[in-house]
Length: 185
Image (cartoon, rainbow, N blue to C red; front, side, top):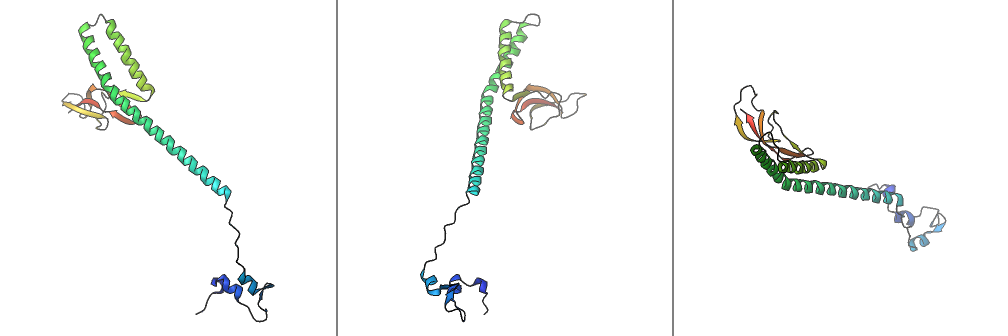
């Protein structure tokens, strides 16, 4: 069995004495080297590396918190929009009914005021990124539209939206509510 002298333990190297060295290692008696506890100097941490790691960790926490705030904001906007959209639909139906009864030549001041309030609500939603869309004439997309009926209409390609019963709403690229439509058969 041949042992590699490089892998020999340090104690063996200190205690071994070769012929003619008189039991000394580098001018020190072997007995003194063995008897004294070899005190290793404490390893000083790399402060610069530690500071960089902590700064990176802090930046990651900041990014995670910013993402959480953005997600909470989006979730809140979706929730508020979900509560407001039925009221906007009711405004539209009430205005359509009132304007149909009034006639074409005289617009009633009450319906005009209600129409202004409706426009203010729609503008407020647009300012925060929520937009209404009416897909009349577009190709039916089940991710954006909800087909409530089909109709055979001449001159219109099959799968085209021919009427919109209820407008859809988007928040950025996300559909809050699909538009309810009639599709050409």
